[in-house]
Image 1: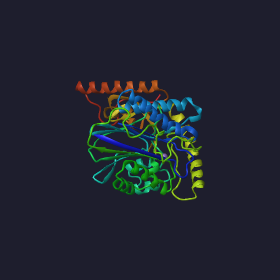
Image 2: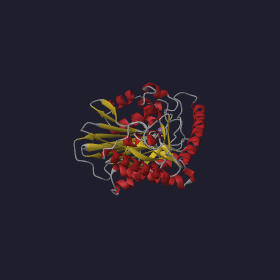
Image 3: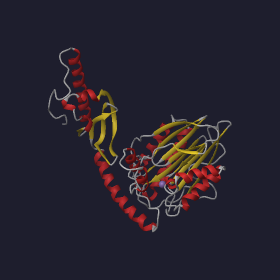
Image 4: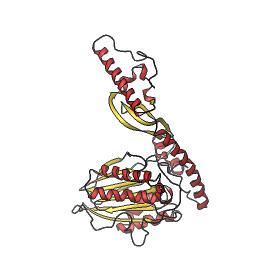
Length: 408
Ligand code: MN
């Protein structure tokens, strides 16, 4: 498959810096939308695409390994460099492999496929509101105007490890792939995006038209788009093939590149921020949104510091697992992540009264304690099986066995 690619990135009408970055290094393409005030956003998105580029060229692992490495590099920098503490970024990557495209995705940038005139969203936003839509709490329409619509539930560089959405899409000649940051999708409807992609055949012109549409719609955010047009022909070389340059430095001449001094704006960490409303007065609203976001962020950072010191044993995919954090979920925001998933059946453990509340999490104040609880569950579950096998009596589902509290 032959790939013709073009990118365009613009600061927009409100922001003081462009914190988006992109990569067009055929067959590897990416967009990243940095966050984290001052220099953070710019550094995070650039560091992410640079690391991706470096690890890809070095042939270091699979695509998801390369994204994970980008996460590690951004995270490490954010904890060692005070100026960019708490920064993070979205990252949406497309790797063209013959007649397939591999996608790796974290955050609320998006990938779309235009095929036979129809526009299809390939990625899921890792935002609070999208989670609320999935859980049926609010409608798709409510999500579009929800005050927390830009709060991210997942971002690159805010923790040691990041969960990456990973997908492979079969493509054919005539397909057009769009990668874009939320500056586009928050200003331009999907209908209009589809229209532009259908009506403007030239790759570069289409990219520029999309950015212009975002600015016409208010330009409240930085906007970055990368378009790939797939046609019959040789696969692109692994390396630099024609189209463009990398990491925001070689953007189209008529449109600003992604490298600019960043705005002193509060949008740090996994917390995200409320972006400016789509009507004037821009600056006042943006300022207040910034203040509210800053308060939320301080709270979340405090909470994160607290939760990182907490442990519990719970259930993952039907198995007993050790988590770091607290077994809470507020409005779809999780305050924990999995550390170890065991092979112990959670259903079996839960038939023992002692572990009846396993699903809610059995808390522990250290990893060692959590591991000890897991070992005890393992022993008890094994014991239960032996009792069952030896034909005596398997414990009735309900409340057999010891009643002491499992938590230390
Ligand atoms: Mn953005």
